[in-house]
Structures are given as C-alpha cells and as structure tokens.
Image (cartoon, rainbow, N blue to C red; front, side, top):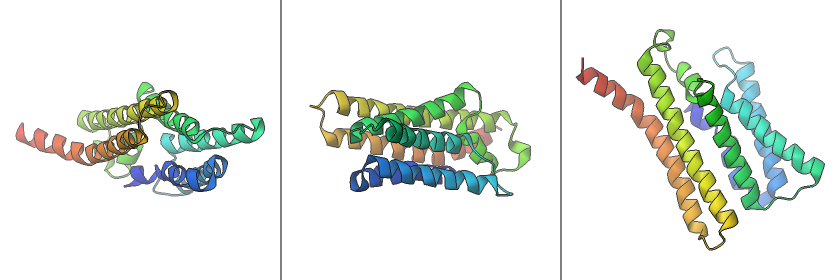
Length: 185
C-alpha cells in the first residue's frame, strides 16, 4: 500500500489539472511529494525513497520551469512530461540496480529476506512491469499529442489499463512466486 500511496502526487495532478489548470496542479503535486519526502525523512520506520525524490524533483522542476519561462503547456504536453519523467525515474532505478519497489518491499519484510535472490528477482520483475506500464502511458500521450485522430477514450483506456495492470501484477506476483517455489521444494 505504501508504494501505491507514493503515486498520490500523480493522481492529484491528474485530478486537478483540468479543474485548476496546469501550474496549480503542478504546485499541489509538488507539495504532496514534499510531504511524503518529509514524512519518510522524519520517520523511524521509513526511508526516503527514490520514487519520492524523483516525484518531488519532477513536479517541482516542471512547476519552476513553467513559472520562470512563463510556459503554458497544454494539458497533453504536460502529461507527456509527467509520464515520461515517471518512466525515467523507474527506468533509472532499474539501470542503477535499485528497483524502486525494493525500498517499499523492505519496509514490509524482515531483513533476513532482503538479500535472498527470489526477493530481489521479484522486485526486479515488478519494477519492470511498472516501467512497461509507464511506457504504454507515454506512448498513449505521444499519440494523443501528435496524432489528433486518436480518440481520447483510447488514451484514457490505455492509461487506466496500464496502471490497473501494474497494480494487480504487483499484488499478484509475489504470491505466485511463493506458491511456485513451495511446489518445487
């Protein structure tokens, strides 16, 4: 649940950008991301996470850029930047061999399992699944931005399916691996 809560700034942005406009939505998302960073920084049971650092930097950077340059992005243009930024954060966590899910998983497991190959592999696979979901979202954003004949409902369907698929996979896969491992032992 902790990992899914970390996506709250993205959800807030998606809900508020149409109601308040891009810049206020970026501001709210930045503030929410900073709240999560501070919560983890001052908590005895939590650690500051790559996803939350990336989220705060992404929203804060976009908001600062928009203010400084007086840029007024279209909703689709800013969503592309947000989704691409999220994809890059997740991809970076894979490249540096620190899958972003690992930090959340460690908060829910005992230290004895942290270095087990199966535990690490599960986090590699789940993080890859999230990267695929975000890649689909970026692709849908690009299609909406540059191919106006693509219906809006298709982009929404791709985004919702990608997110729900990643959530369901995240919940399902560890149990599948445990069940599969117990069958082979």
